[in-house]
Every structure is written in C-alpha cells, then in structure tokens.
Image 1 (cartoon, rainbow, N blue to C red):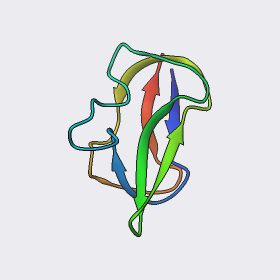
Image 2: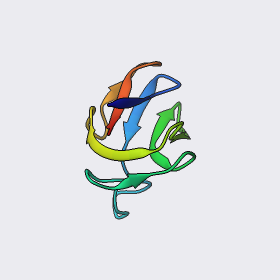
Image 3: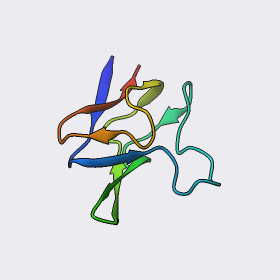
Image 4: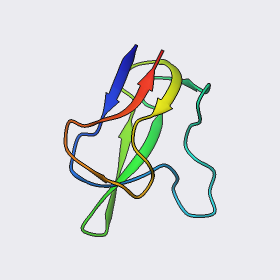
Length: 77
C-alpha cells in the first residue's frame, strides 16, 4: 500500500465542479501526474497530482473537508 499526501493546507475537493465527475474512484488506475483532487486556499484552487502509480483503494478524506499539509488523501495498491 502507498498513499498520496496533500502538499498544502486548505479545503479538499474530489471533483473540479459540483456537476463534474470525481477525478478518481475506488478501483481506478492512477498514473504519475494524474490529478486526484483539488485544494482550495483563499479562493485559489491547486491540483493534487499523483507522485506514484497504482490502483485507488480509497480516498482517506471526504470532499469539502479541511486538509493539512502532509495529510494522506488517497490510498493506492
């Protein structure tokens, strides 16, 4: 198992807009560089990109939850 961590503190989002599908779901393949979520800091959105490849086991945080820098966001197999 491996995890992808959030690089900055803010509010986490699993989709680019309320109408858009989630970036990834459990069972999806993830390649290095894939966007797996967004973090909003002071009305500015920053992409969280995968730094390793694998298969999504689960998101470890819900959309719209506060997130800290270094916090695990996704678990990969």
